[in-house]
Length: 345
Ligand SMILES: Cc1cc2nc3c(=O)[nH]c(=O)nc-3n(C[C@H](O)[C@H](O)[C@H](O)COP(=O)(O)OP(=O)(O)OC[C@H]3O[C@@H](n4cnc5c(N)ncnc54)[C@H](O)[C@@H]3O)c2cc1C
Image (cartoon, rainbow, N blue to C red; front, side, top):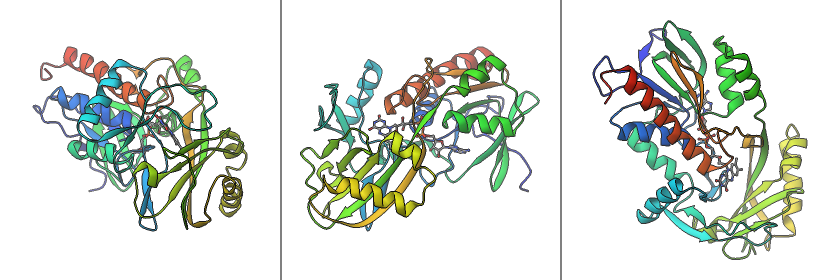
């Protein structure tokens, strides 16, 4: 039973191409949403327990904290319009135009997500029926289609595939399935490097002392950021701060004992906090942000069968880049599918 391939869901006729998106972060969700509004249904798979990827929120002692992306900002008209819609729907709210300690304030408006950053992908994912807790182990060629081996469920066939996980993870899936990419392209993908990041969520026994509107930008040695989730409106009744370490600290301590990292981060945060830490949780992001992103918003890894690469590293290093990349992948996919199939309109 486990070995029988299942067919990716599609609302159209049984001849319509079956599309799978791997990853339900902002890139994967925006890609699936755009395909959906083009009347084209896709299957979105994510190994996590909820959609969102690095737009992550979790509880500590019953109080929520954003522990991945902290805010949204836009440099493009396309994402600005999207943010305006989310604001009108009461999902996003202006947080500020800058934070204390910023070395080079961009002056751009920063938006937070009401109820925590993860609420946005969770809502987007709900309407798309994302298959969570579904880890893709490998991707291989199967005639003129892709075969996805899944951990703990039946393999899945797809006529077109969009990979939106961090680039090294996407490459690993293809290597495990013995997919050979064009050598020049493979070399270019190997240049995409990421910064790791340690995030410490700390519940305090009193006020945080973090200046209004609830965030402090630091030089990254060793800490880069402290945000107060209570001031931000993510949680109520207790001060819970999110502390990000800088890239150098996170790289050099990446394999250290967790207790040691917690101790060092807590010590460094102490001088900025007005109250002692009561409870803590440490998260280690291996692929926090791309350091050397690619220039293009979507990369065509293979034409036949279609294989696209999208995600924040395609064109940037933030949520906006991920969203624009997802939209670009959908556009590129729709254009090709409409060309190749009379069932796609
Ligand atoms: C600590 C931190 C702070 C940040 N701060 C900001 C900020 O303030 N503002 C901002 O704009 N950006 C920020 N970013 C960056 C931002 O979070 C990312 O750029 C963006 O969320 C990336 O979206 P994505 O869809 O490309 O990737 P992801 O969100 O990483 O989504 C990829 C998804 O793929 C899934 N996946 C991976 N492998 C598999 C597999 N084998 N099978 C199935 N699923 C798989 C993962 O579970 C994940 O959900 C921050 C990131 C971090 C980590």
